Amino acid sequence: MNLSDFEKTNYSGLYISKTAHPTFGKKYIARFQYNKKRYVKVLGYTKKDNLTKKSALTLMQRFKDSIVVEKEESTPTVVATDKNFDKKYQEILEENKNLKAILGNFKDIDPEVLKDGIQKIYDLEELKRYQIELIKLQNYLEAENKRMIILFEGRDASGKGGAIRRITRYMNNKHYRVVALGKPNETQKNQWFFQRYIQHFPTGGEMVLFDRSWYNRAMVEPIFGFCTKEEYEIFMEDVVNFEQDLVRQGMILIKLYFSVSKDEQKRRFDRRINDPLRQWKFSEVDMQAQDLWSEFSEKKYEMLRRTSSRSAPWYIVRSDDKHKARLEAMKIILNSVDYDGRNYALDFNADEKINISVQKELMQMRKTANY
Image (cartoon, rainbow, N blue to C red; front, side, top):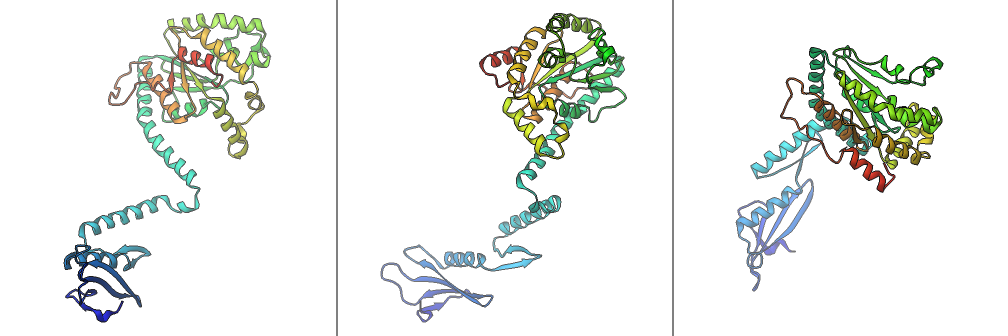
């Protein structure tokens, strides 16, 4: 390309050919120097590309914009003629600056870990609206001198403990207790079975959350030989009447079963084994949970089938997604009482994919042993 074949236009850097091509017309080129380098670009012909001097100028400016960069605090700023574009670009730079200030040295963090952490923040914010309602519920129990028991049952690593922590996080600890009983001692073994649980029951205005309950006798104890077949059958026959008596005497009884899938339980066990912060959670019983999956399923099926009553039904919470399980557990608790000051703007409806009826869970268990 010989520059002598072109003549300058009245715009710096924009040239047009002196002689027109018989078919395509005159040719426009952009030619300028930046940072000791010379840039030349063919913009097109007047006829073939339908170029006018004005449109050629626009193309040349875009070409310049793609090359000429001003550095401002190590942040690239494109030189633009479009004021709207420039304003939008500055807004993006400001937003980027703010995000960096919040995230800090995010490049040093595994993107998946960072993504997981950010999602947890959104999850916690969603739960807060329902945690406010739980405080209202607690105030109602105290004002009306009501008693509430919440049972948290489920296989190992089903998410019971995490749900309890989220539910009680902002509650007044003077009016609730979390009870997690260990193995019975010799004296307790010779007592009426329910006696060691009864001594932890709530007084007026109090809520008690059982992290595992008397339903140990329905699942864990018979599988590991901690009770006889006769003791198991006596419990299964008596527990419905026992709970009906509690409800008749004014106790608010909520039974939550956290239903985790076999694959998800294994994933959580593997995480416990490999994560130093979670290794303390892993026990000898956990090691057998996957091997004894079928045995636990049989006992779970019988427990749900025989001990869910009209006065004390089981609520099945699918817990592979921990956040959704915690949210549904809160909804179930809040829907159990008509407390004062309820925020009806919130969604208290059950998520039917997470909050499963006993009948649906039993039907699913008949089809597959995954739960």
